[in-house]
Image (cartoon, rainbow, N blue to C red):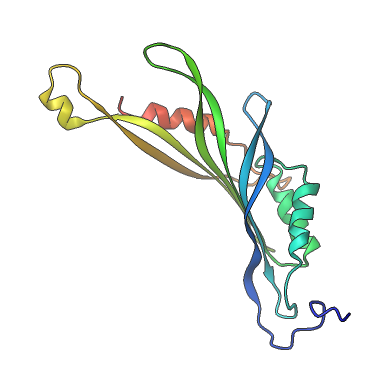
Length: 195
């Protein structure tokens, strides 16, 4: 059978991105204490498609992901991106890994402990000249209702809100990115809430 995908593309149309999305996959995230947390991520991976290719090899995305060991930090993302570019002969690559991250929290009154879920996203992009990594963390917080506080002598009510932080980190000489821990961003958000 003729290998149609590997025949030259005479239309000369390059694509900015071609890849996979909505891939539900088990991953491991390192926490600040150097412990591993296993979770399930929604993963998107893409590469640029040069004008002389008819398409990309979708199965190679999963091969690169699996060969990475599925352990992700700011220092492993550049390795995955470079492997994508090399394997798929692309000038640029992008990965987006969205996952729930769990921390143990104490209830304010009873002090009983339970797991709290935080939505997190690792987004990495690599071209021939630039490399980028953004950590996004969404933290549920309580905010004190100012109107309720004004009219109540005691017992003003709180409202639930969300703080979403996108933190772009600096790349180090070895190609990895400065580590920003999810726990740090959660602590900053919780300290910024009004109740």
